[in-house]
Image (cartoon, rainbow, N blue to C red):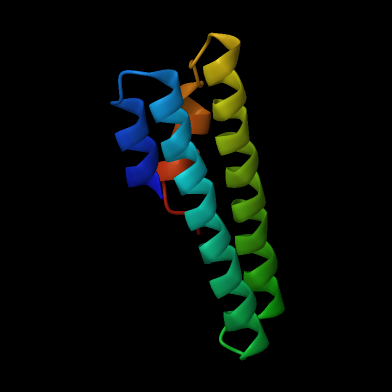
Length: 90
């Protein structure tokens, strides 16, 4: 998912950049599905699932905000929010 965001950021048009954000959101949906399956199959505790689901929800919001900013004329994302996408959470 971060690779899709990076590739989109390197594109020359807003439309191309937006398409890669759509792909990133689709990848995030796949991750969410894997979390649900992992929880249902007993590979994740309820506590771990809740923590990871929170990260997924936050990331959905960040990607959505970046999409909004792209078409609002500003692609500035504060560093601490950008790092959230790239930094493993424990």
